Length: 295
Ligand code: SF4
Image 1 (cartoon, rainbow, N blue to C red):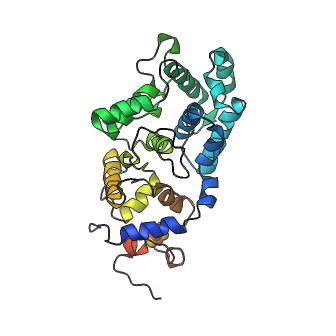
Image 2: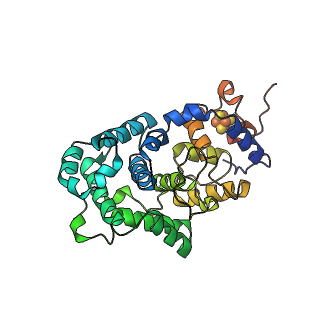
Image 3: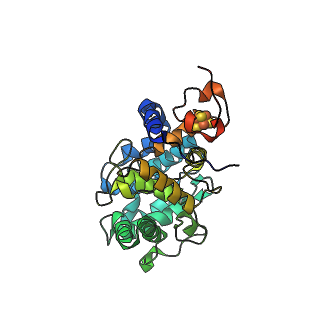
């Protein structure tokens, strides 16, 4: 297939897509709608956010349900999971929890790691910011991943259960993972604009990278924001850089809209005039290149 570059009008068309987007419809479907009520302060925002991001696998209905089930096990307050006196009861309540391949014992370990982390630090922004200052976003995400993996934890946290480490990939891992879930968590924490939470004030929004899920990747590829055929960290860098050229101060502004255009069925991922007709980015879409549509 020939290479496909962004059109000069793409910025204008993305803005039209954003302005016309039914945010309220898609907010209700997004995991952030379940996280927001739990995020009553920064600590609870981080805990609810990292639980939500960790469970962000599969369709949004199942993800929201999984987050709500975890919250219910803590009596509706995610800070309950961090209280030292609740360790035995926490393990008991989480014992039968499952969401896709994520198990309750892994979440129990995450809460042990977080409780230990918060005994020495005020916020997960600290390791991220230290990495960002040392080497940019990918190093920040690596330091955050390392903290969540429990590297450097106290002995009393204990050994991680099988599969735990893989829940928190780093962009510096040889696998080249796109790290969608941690990148999404950072977006929620940094951006103040709706629908994000904005608890991290030290990270400039211009530094953010796009959480490249399947929907965002598909549209990004078809708009020419990346030519890469795999959803890798290199693709994350490329799409983010293309979006940064459009909006240097808020490169992930369009992430929610692009993602939910795919989730909602507004983008059929094939040429379908009935659905594509009103799409603001149709003139930029690879599937419609060189095709005229009768008025
Ligand atoms: S033109 Fe159609 S296929 Fe292309 S991005 Fe828009 S809705 Fe999706």
